[in-house]
Image (cartoon, rainbow, N blue to C red):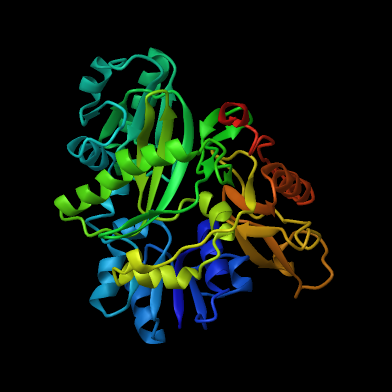
Length: 436
């Protein structure tokens, strides 16, 4: 089969890496891809948001299956467009993609179907919002309604911080139109966890659990990012919690999809807060999580292509899905300054000196020629891998225990260098005591 993967981050690299292991997969293309993906797929210079360009390429190349990674392309209706021209696509349609592209859409869905979540109100008028600052007390959760690359959430500790966040999001429009509407939520205390699910419109099947770390600094300090690391399975999951999630969240969600006419096919990512009252939904996403995918997919034993085809053909209930007992830890190496402003084009060293069983997923990298690098080089034909984003690399290690995987991930992360490199040192450590 000819596969086209849309996107160019760590999630797409993990998907390409997993699909490349299938004996049923022939050629793999990726639009636009990155320096790591280029080692296992043919990268095509088409942006993920260029729907027309992707459709033309898929038609011309006779693509058998397009796998959509990024949320923006999904929200723009790429699955609908590909389906219209006869190309099978893995991912939810535009109507279903509102579950990620609009937080107010999701909160209304959750409330309508009595799915546990935080209390909320939505605002489109900045003065009305400021007049209601602190309605749920502090900390105050302030969310841009639309897509903001995982950075549209502010947890304000007091009134001054809340007003400042409102002015930035709705006044200065730092997230563009995504901040035209703001959702204010009750602050939930607990432990964050993530559940990724395969969904075919009739059946919802959770993958192995993962725990993500959103804040930039150790100890969950600093601003939110797209994710600084994950481990799988999450140490807080047990049979009781899994039953609660299944009965209180997964089953009502699939029934809600059917009642609302949402023919959801693809990946449903459920962000959870495990509170004293039980699990509550923080957010829905419509695609593989990044970086959760980098710790979950390496533990998947079943052919990913078979699962994707089962989803598209609405035969997920018939598909057996098996997982490895090994544990996985993924540590994200990010550019200096991220999640704020940062420089690109920093040469990366150490990638060829890692343990053989460690997987490096590229998130924000590019291949540059020697003559593009300042200073002398051995040859103008030399190639270098350089940074090209905020989150640059995901170092994933497997082990019989979480600690074995963690030590291996950090040992290899320490051997990689680029100017300004930063990464958290506590991935896999937080909440272990609570979990026990």
